[in-house]
Image (cartoon, rainbow, N blue to C red; front, side, top):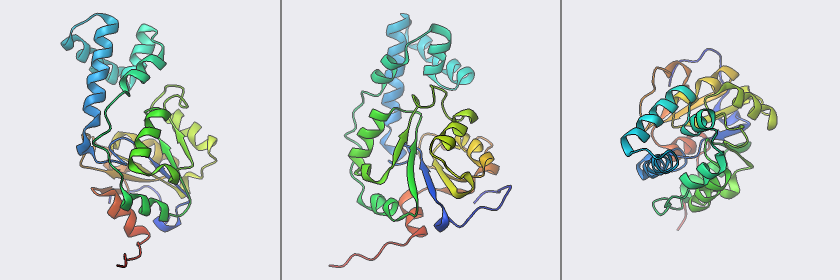
Length: 231
């Protein structure tokens, strides 16, 4: 558990649970991000008529300067975002399977459950359906709803909180990317970083992380213990 600048409420008293989607609700070992990254690279190669090395160098620059590949394409090339988002999310989800235990643990949590993702609503809907978690979430707030300004842009968090009438001091945010947690912590949210995926370094953001975990299901079960199964 990391340091916190202000007291956080007990987890059992959280009113709004905010979950990232990719590498958070399914294990980072599924490695869907690799296919997404490959498709982003291929899109750039096809659109800009450049080779593989140049496309991936451009992606790295976009990430540094603009936060996402998409934002770089929009800002520097006037790219229409819909085509890019549709293309990169046409991925194989066969490695993602239904997770009954996680569903029960999420369902037992107090309060609302929301998705806050840099992906799209259709992608989130596909993933949630594969996991068997669709019924547990009241809303999906995606990159389109953020006006294509992705996490960790603080303005997107402010808009998210206003849109869903969230009291940040009674909210918790679960993320696999440590860099996305400081804006949540600044608003007063309890922050939970799940490790074990492709973004395994806290990148110096440890002071903004209240809980560091490696098993989301077990962590949630510890908040509201599940009844033992009977035979």
